[in-house]
Length: 220
Length: 220
DNA sequence: CTTCAGGTGACAGGTTCCCGACAGCTTTGA
DNA sequence: TCAAAGCTGTCGGGAACCTGTCACCTGAAG
Image (cartoon, rainbow over all chains, first blue to last red; front, side):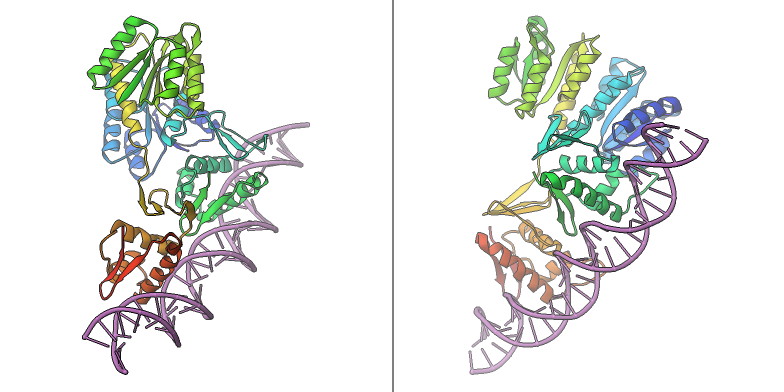
């Protein structure tokens, strides 16, 4: 899951970023509105956490433009102005939720989870596929009753495949969803993760299917 | 849009109900947990507004059971201001949003709108022709209930024929539509794809008709 | 019957994928 | 602070599969 954090306060940005990273998310941070605008135009995210009080820039303006350009990510707004007007305005402009500062990181995490779940249509926190149980809330996986520790990349890959179970996911989509913007992921690397994940899931008879030229797919 | 309101305080339930009715929603109100459980088991809603503090019943319990049974409606939780824990738990159990009491009805409306807006973007367009089911989003095809793996070219060809079902598609159009920008496709190659595709579709009694001198056509 | 568009088996590249080996990097634990 | 363990990603050989040409066959139209 890719998340963009738009926050000019470095300390706060750092705290948010590490909280999200702990949740196995791929987090990118930008510190001002222009940068946010640019990156939102060129890259795809699952969720955007945006501070409304950016120096010399209106967060709502960025949000509005983002939606007008067809941006589909979930947007969580951080705001200090806790006036009702701004809240309603935020949601009607296409934000999906907001938090008023100061807030608790635990609550941020819960909201992020809820938003991401909403987006992928995963309603129940636990998803079972054969002998595989994937808990999107606790972010844990178990196989044949045994807990399974996955490296971050493999975990993210599995999550993506599960959230699109029954659909083909292209190698490029996988690469995008695993990447941070300081680092690209080659198609070859994707193949490798698939290979490693397959090896782990083999004991439970779960297979990731290759659809040549199109991508991969986890069957339900 | 059908909305279920689960709220034991009659005055509040009334206020919510009339606010939502003003928004052209069909609102049902129940006042206790058992009733809520029952109606959620037997009827479908687009959205559920649920107070967590129900007399002698845990709202979270109802929510959990609802999700476990595959309930897919959006759920908006109402909770007293100081119970951060409940909010976090609620979101993790599959609620989509919450409001802390007391709240303004204007804000409730905004959130309901946001949630319903979310919900409407969730179906993949499947096209069925006889025993053939074609899902262009999932990029999957199934025939007689069995998934069918098609090579890229054949998949694209089928997509083209389906999108113009009932119309003649010329060999040239097919060649153009399949070509990569670096490579042209000979008429003979097109004939070959048609031939291969026909062989696969034969089991389902689906035939691609030849219109001599003009092209091909998939009948509905 | 002749002609020619279309159909199809076989085969030779060409792609795409798979995965073992390895090296650089990060995290963990003492 | 240093070593060990684990994670990440590149390389490359080999396997599996796709693609499109050739050559020959079939069947329709005149």
